[in-house]
Amino acid sequence: EAGVVQSPRYKIIEKKQPVAFWCNPISGHNTLYWYRQNLGQGPELLIRYENEEAVDDSQLPKDRFSAERLKGVDSTLKIQPAELGDSAVYLCASSTDPTGSLEMETQYFGPGTRLLVL
Amino acid sequence: GNSVTQMEGPVTLSEEAFLTINCTYTATGYPSLFWYVQYPGEGLQLLLKATKADDKGSNKGFEATYRKETTSFHLEKGSVQVSDSAVYFCALSGGGYQKVTFGTGTKLQVIP
Image (tube, rainbow over all chains, first blue to last red; front, side, top):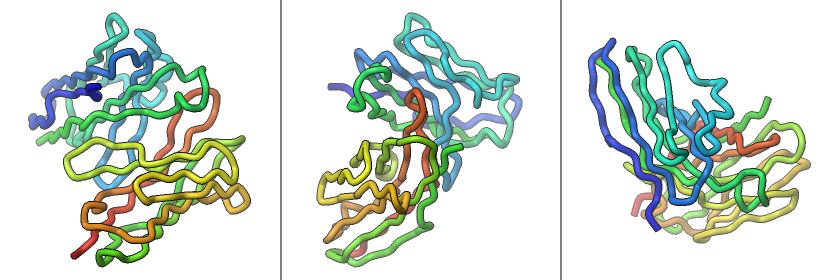
């Protein structure tokens, strides 16, 4: 079974430029998450989708960040314009129905996109 | 709110040494507890989990016991290998949905 796929793996941009990250979750996983992981820190949730609906975006800086999950499968996270402080690893994860048994709590992570803003 | 505190690294051990990485948590209710591992250049992988008090999660020689009385979930392995070198994250999941709170990670380096 293929895991969570993310692209690109690395991105270097200048500040004030836009950037977009793409995620393809594990087939059949209806829940998708975007996390940001700063250097030396644990991941922090940015947004969570249940199918195509964003059900928790309280930590997403909405002035410059946006996300979409059209058709409830692939997702794109965008930053416009990027700032120096946005340099981090952006992780995508997916899981099955969270309203089911506790066995469904496992989130499967992609390799991440490492962003460097100059 | 929920929080996870784990010991700072890096932790450097010789091969076959005993490993303990401490993790304590603060949460309301009855969270599930996890250890994730991140190998260089890769995403996080679930290592083990425990969903209720006194449960022991185990995988690949690693184990951790959910201690509600001490709000701890320490990771242990009896004999580490060079291939265990990675960053280990303690995490908890609580509330009505899968909101996972991660610790800051502990880097483990095992030398031959």
